[in-house]
Length: 375
Ligand SMILES: Cc1cc2nc3c(=O)[nH]c(=O)nc-3n(C[C@H](O)[C@H](O)[C@H](O)COP(=O)(O)O)c2cc1C
Image (tube, rainbow, N blue to C red; front, side):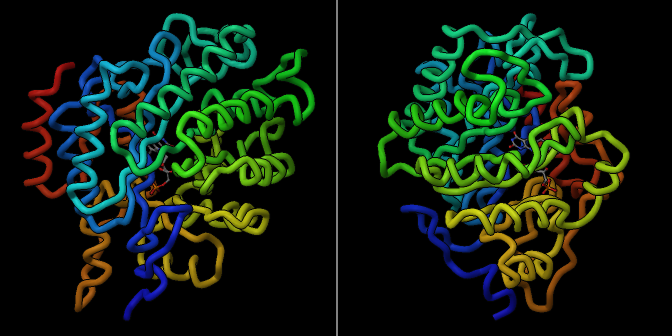
């Protein structure tokens, strides 16, 4: 069989994956502006789940609305959102994929009047200066992650993924964490808050429920969170019961540095980092980043650089990726152009993303649903 590793089953903790392809989280601004599920959002997830990937990881869903809610982000901070989360989980599962829900606190990147972070360090391009979190806020946020994770489990998701970027990374990074209490300074101290979040989530969902982690392996800033420290953190995450690491690199501060723009335009641009992480841990490692072809995906697996392949924009632009990979004769997969920033720019303007490269019927269908979305 062509791509025999890519299409072989795999186990992640108790989860049985039918192949090695995962839809990586992709926030597109499709929810209603109040954080509820729209028909446009459901249609998008129907398409992604029906694509043939083994698991869909949702876009980041916020655990706290007051300090993290941005217009158009889904919410997991209250039971009022449980029916919507149930519908989302059901939609993904009914269309053939396992459903994993990513939970997040956006920290200094939240579009709120007074964002919070580890320290008062300006991060987002033009947002307000964040306020350093006080002890009580830290404890409340840990609880918010735990209750949101339990809500995700109750909603019927097969797994929860903690977003280790944003607020959690702002505590880990010496660039954004200037605290001089037990949460700042040494790596041990900077890891304290994210580790408490993981432990509280694990306790809330119980030992047998899978918990993944979006793992910022390299902040791509000279004074940031770098592999010299992140690899130690990876081993700790494994020890405290995380079931997989989904590797990423960069933050809004570093994405737009010319050398990183050039790097991120390359196919498989995070593979090298994923490989280094994989050598440190025994738990499965997911790698994403312009894995445009099944040939590249199979090579990554054959060379044991990662265990699972994440597709975000790659699947969004061509939901037929998986079917085309197995078609006889092989069909040409449509690639996300390396110099296109439409989706990134659109979400940063808080608008829903319509990919300019979609087939006309798909575009028409989504635009029609967009007109029903409450903005
Ligand atoms: C518009 C956009 C939204 C994204 N949203 C999320 C998100 O909500 N959570 C997350 O962990 N990563 C998010 N990512 C990162 C992707 O999951 C992925 O790591 C990255 O885009 C590289 O994979 P790709 O080349 O297949 O898109 C986003 C990326 C883009 C471009």
